Image (cartoon, rainbow, N blue to C red; front, side, top):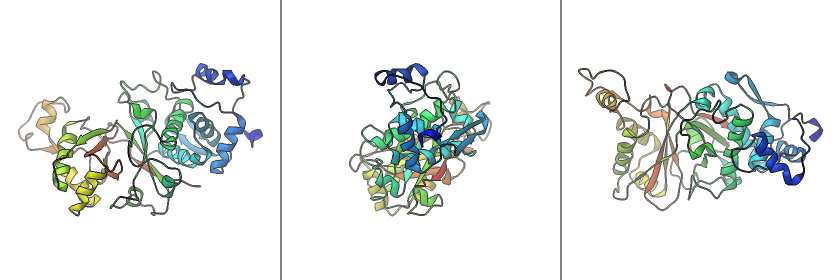
Length: 344
């Protein structure tokens, strides 16, 4: 396998390899694992891929993303070979025209790539779906997301200050991977809602802002918890032009909501209806152009075009009255969430 690799080779002393990677601009600011030929070959074997196989083509960049390039960056990120199929599926997702790479990859809005893993592979790889959901501590979560971002940097050219022009960015641009807690969720898994079988493994990629946490310890009804969520969602974030929002409902809130018999469809409908802003409010707060016109006080604009544009995911710790919502990247709803099968 190593003889088939076509990437340029560099002869570097072992002790200097990490510094060499820094000097070449290949890192995200953290040390990387030197991508030796043997390591890259093992990574390719983890997904049974030929190094020349094209994983995706980013039209706006005229960039072909080959399996070898993905494997090199997965090695540098610290992935195990068994993580490679998830990385490949995520790269397929961001290269999909529906995700529209150019916008979230270059925008000043500074989107991260939220990745939601579903199906058996999430359990097999121990992708965290519970406590400290967006935090450190799980190799699969951190290295899979990091590998995708390194592909964006090193293959697609999305480097900060050049093609990546994020004004602020956010920590999820380093790695932004979670799994849905299917084992304890009372609801239909996200990937099944999006057309896959429960026994298939998938990753959903969404161009996303950072998670916004909300707190409600007082309500013992679904409507009470979701009213708090909606009040926060309605006025936070950009509230204009997002193609999606993701709702990440943790254990206590999930139990309260499901105790009232609410399913994901009812959650989406309630949230969609109760997060609409009047045109007058949007104009007064500098989010919509133009003077306030007669009727603007009662004319409403939803956060997203349809309730189906709200992704509901059961994940997070069992204890604590906290959940989160994640606004999608805002640009006239042009970047769609994409779900890809993970093939092993």
